[in-house]
Image 1 (cartoon, rainbow, N blue to C red):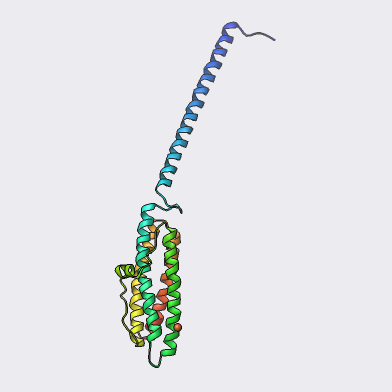
Image 2 (image 1 turned 135 degrees about the vertical axis):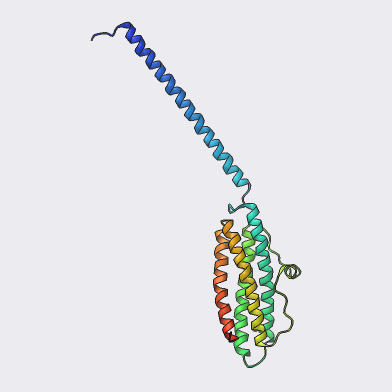
Length: 206
Ligand SMILES: [Fe+2]
């Protein structure tokens, strides 16, 4: 085999060394960029984790949602006790019909009270559980003795207006906080209660 002239061989070797040096520098730079990217990602994740609750929601937004849910809980609790009163005290020819309907309603409200309270806990807050707190925060007022069916149904309609309005506000808040759990719950409540409003209004010939 014919050997290459010395000078040319030297140039080739030199070219090879330069090539390897440049490749090594490129590789080190890429590695540095990769490590820096990984560190930045880790910092972002840590910062995000520091400001989120157990289900990954922004702490401040979850707290605000829980406060509003506590207002809803207060309203449901007063509403529930009012409807129990209507169930007990109702009089007149529609007694059997309304007595049963009111039982159906307060049973439904009782379930919602539990669901809302447990949602508040899921968000990392504490549900109110005393009637003195409920009275302070609820827009729905305690009913005094109501024995007339029409009056009871009118109160129920006004109470639904309050809960539906609050739930729409919660729908907006939970949407902004990416809280699908609360959002879906409010959505179900609104749809069911709007239908009940139609039914109770029909009872009043409205
Ligand atoms: Fe009863």
